[in-house]
Image (tube, rainbow, N blue to C red; front, side, top):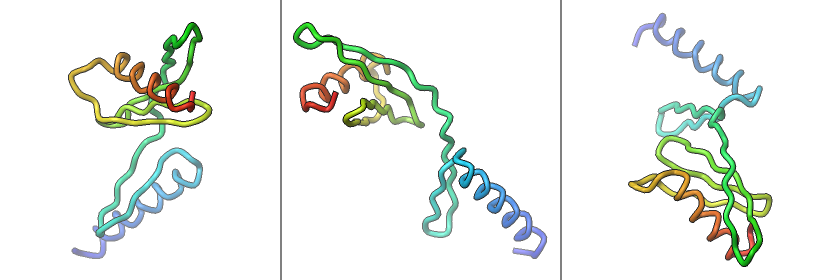
Length: 101
């Protein structure tokens, strides 16, 4: 690899580190590879009713992973054939059953 190419790569990584410090992205450096994950996933509200009580949480999708969170905990799973809304409702129900909603 020549110096010019290494300089461009280094400049790019420094720019991304600046974004990380500002809270815009996360980074993983492993096995000589640099991966960046954006934190701009759109969050959606999810609700379910258990024993006459409405339980609320939020869900969002990161790549192929659906994440559901409440003030007391969270769960995640890989997306599949089920719609994200339905899957989020199931995860919220599990959180509620565990006392985490």
